[in-house]
Image 1 (tube, rainbow, N blue to C red):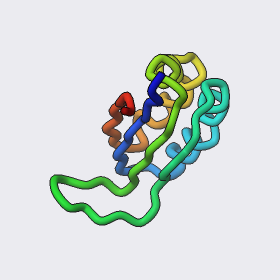
Image 2 (image 1 turned 90 degrees about the vertical axis):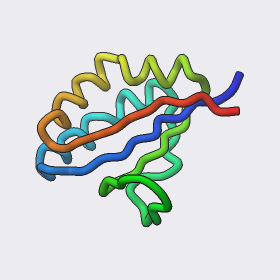
Image 3 (image 1 turned 180 degrees about the horizontal axis):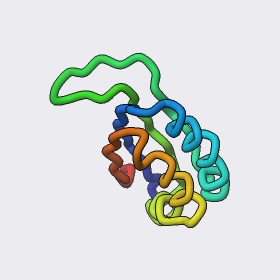
Length: 95
């Protein structure tokens, strides 16, 4: 079964509320076996638009990646991010 990845591009607009998101999201990630591969490090935009932070999170399967996003734990954490930034998140299955 191929792995799957969350690919997120985020611009933080309220660092205090975004920090609440960062602090409350780990239980969902742990529950679904998430592994952070990139989290806000240096980047070079080659094409298209950019955001402040780029995040890549690996999951064992597409089903786990989607279940994590839809979980009560993650949705609670996400509520803190709602007014704290702009996010584009895609879940993609690996090869």
